Image 1: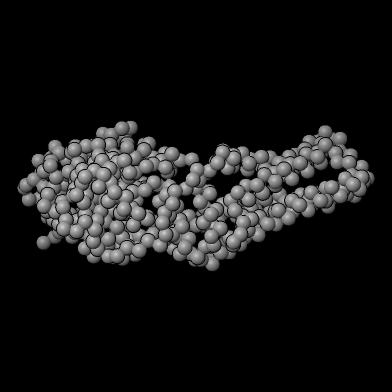
Image 2: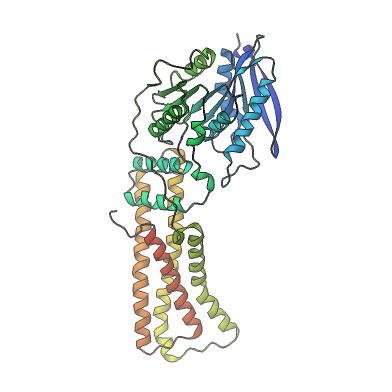
Amino acid sequence: MNASSLYGEEEISIPAEGQTLEGTVRAPLTPGRYPALVFVSGSGNGSRTEFEPQAEFLSMTGVVTLAFDKRSVGYNFRDRDFGLLADDALRMVEYLKTRPDVDPSRIGVWGVSEGGWVVPIAAAKSDSVGFVILVSSPNVSPLRQVAWALNEQLLRLRAPIGVRDLLTRAMGVVGFDFLRYDAQPALDGITQPVLAFYGTTDPSIPFVESTNALMKAMKEAGNEQYTIRFMGRGDHAMRINGGDFTAGYLDTMANWILGLPGTAVPSVHVAGATPVQRFEASDVPAAPWYAGGTMLGLTICLAAVGYVAGPVAAMVVRLRGRHHTPEVNARLWPPIRRRLAKMVWTGVGLLASVVAFITLLVLFSINQAGAWPAVLAGWLVVRVLAVLMLIQEVTAVAAVVWGLREGMRPSRWQHVAIAGVLGGTGLLLVAAAYYGLFSFPW
């Protein structure tokens, strides 16, 4: 018998705040009232198609499933309202309650990754949620989770300590409010049965601390109806190296849903493969005012202005036809100008290399792979350029002082060039020092 003949599919549209949400319902064809499950996606676009394998499996075992496309209005890289996403999930729950093939007392909400911050809000907010399934739920703040994931990847790439310090300080500058979301209050409000899955090879979340946070919340809520299972070789999506689902994941989920309420209180709350988390996640402190995003942006802008101020001033002088170079300046200025030009290129190169290096690390982290020699080479380039810029600043100041002692009388535009380049580079050096580019150990 064809598997698809065991269930039917139906496309639905649910009005929500700011837009209409499109979804797919899969339901067993045999008449009856079944438990139901709403899928809540992780970060990103959140297409319902990603849930097809799990939804089809559950529908064949006797569970009505609803997968929907994540909203695009009010959700973007910078702004994320987990409460708004939870309301979307609850709209799906309310829709399922109206279906004749759904048991309204057994409607659950399933969330993966970022969905682990959304689902607890929905569960704590509405009694219509009958049970909760969490897959790779971080249960710590988004910023703490991201910091842990990047550090885990850096360990795999054998990155020096300085790289981790650089990224930690860089993340402290990020001003996205949702990154400091406190997940604990919503977790504490869950009184429904909970099934949580964690993969022992997941490089994206601190799964031991995530488990501890969940157990702490269950204790706070007085909720003994929770089951935590560690899946051997499972990754962030409960798959093995991105392929097949880890053994037992789908069966455990189906049996648990179909067995409720009898499966709500297990004989052992935590079981499965042995998890090993190599280091503890830590909060990323907010950057001090002098190193915040606004000040960093201002520093880079001032440095850029300083770098172009001299050439612009010289061009204005030439256009006005007032260009006159005293003989002593004509002799002493060229070597100083060459030093200043080299500083500008070094400063620009340092900024470009830092951006490229951080981009490389983020891409490696997203792809969960990368070549450690590339990380070491990139870090070497960044450090060498920073030290070179420091040396150039010192030698350029010495050259200007020497020129003044030799009788050079800088023109107005030359004053602008000297002050702009030396001042701009000085600002970049302060920023480089804050981000640990001159620190030791390596």
